[in-house]
Image 1: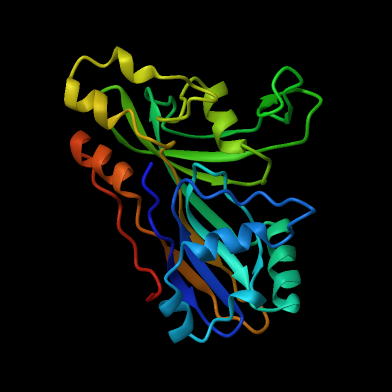
Image 2: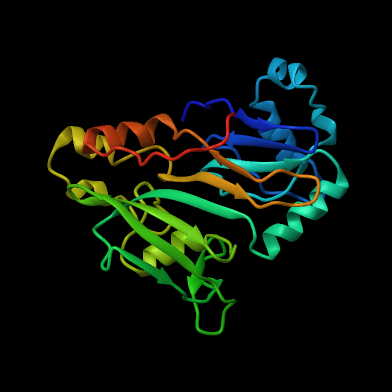
Length: 250
């Protein structure tokens, strides 16, 4: 997969929000605690960082996305901001909205998945639904239906590893391109062009919108990140348009 650059969606003197492309890992090893930030910023236009007065060495990752997931990632410009935003996330005051293209058509069209999750003992790469696992909840809404698939809006109430992917898989609506939990289901599609659109190089899961409440030292924010090219191409092929909203200027 050709690496697409990351782009800065928002920046002020305390916060930087980046649109992460698929393919960049944000996992962190003890031996390289800044590895995730360095990989993300290495994909970002250095001149853009410089013009905005952003010193990459001071940025701290507030939260993570899976390597194949694209979209909004917050980075704090100091330790105090990092602690504050981490607390807001843990107390569920940050609104995160994802878009996913999934196989099938969820019924009902609006609902909530609340299956607890735990590591899959048979495959260390995966999580699984487990009654004895950690509580996990995801609200969903079907935005549009098309042949074979649906575009759904997802709002996680918790932040478990692979939560959205596992909840959708358990519901029978695997994310398009998610070979770990769903497999290559595009082979059942007869239309050749549609089959190609539904066989992307990454899973079609995107951290689309981010809402920050009024926090001391911050103004409330509502941000949106453009979808990656393959996601947009699939929607265009399916005749699906994105919903619009009034958001803060970039």
